[in-house]
Image (cartoon, rainbow, N blue to C red):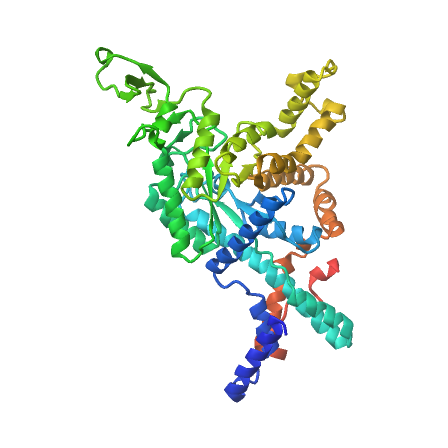
Length: 532
């Protein structure tokens, strides 16, 4: 017997025990409502989705083609439509497809202050609020889809079509939820380790099973693809990793995941010199990357900061801002050191921000990490901050030069030009872009590929195209031809926007609650009937 049938029987038993007061309660209607609300709390979701991610990681360890993917979504509706689309196009499954919640998009789109740069200036609670909103919309997608199946089940019963009834009942009993894991950005923790812990609890309670934290100074935090990044000594970062773990354990999400991000590849600054307890420890290693000059005591100026390195007195180079600078060319080493230390401190996955998307660079760093931690897995940001077309065309161009091929038809600095779209070089570059995720999964153990801000850009592009047509000569045809007609022909569910917003579910509930007295919206005069 299925869970659905069990729930019908359980309510039927309650009804029998209650007597005539429950005469109007339909056990199957109650079971339907229960099926449509499978996840009762955010913690239910976090525990369920953490299990999915852990299982996916185990599969990936044995098969590098089974990497996972996500797209960043800045609104619950966007995340909902993404998952509806995935189920529509991939056999009703959501396997290995997640959601990503970008701190950049929260800052730019969800702050009460208005659009902000990615510098952790938005409200601490806004990230947890977006997690909750995303899961509200995904749960609504479940309820809507099951509601359609319930109506189809009733129609099959009324028609006496037993085969169709059995088929639909099987779909109900084996329904695939739209609820998938979210990798959620907690930036640099929005303060000290205690602040990180408090914010993490909010995010986990909202449903987040995987939290991504970076090793920048919280009050100097910058977008990973901008200049001016300032990292912290490892003791500070590892305290925040432990704060996340304690938050997961306190809330009973024992298998929650921590993604440790290092910005060291592009970060040339630090706010403090690390404490050294003994030669060769993490603090000593961190300080070894500082750009210093050897001096005598007599050379010291008032207010100088100096320290002993191998028996010599050295003065780290200090900027007017008071920040210290690392030696040029140490980014690779510092990233590897950060990653090894983060795993030692309890991180489950790593994230390395790179300046450009190149397989060999990512592989080089991960090869060094995996000498110490062979199973180390990476989350990689397929960032819109990269000019993918130009980067990969230049990589293809350089490969042609190295192979001794004729490149006289191409101008390397101008490879973004549309004139190269249909060329051999353009085709080679596009193929490299197409296989980039599979290549880095295989070569660099990238478990999860995400695009941080895709729906920010798709929204801007689609609105620009619509505005150009609608406010121009095409007028209403600009909307009908480019939007509604395509929605109908491509089977986009929200063409029936009343249904998508929950109108049919509301009608179902009216009938459950009021029976024949229900005043429903889905009658013959509903204009949505024009869409079939």
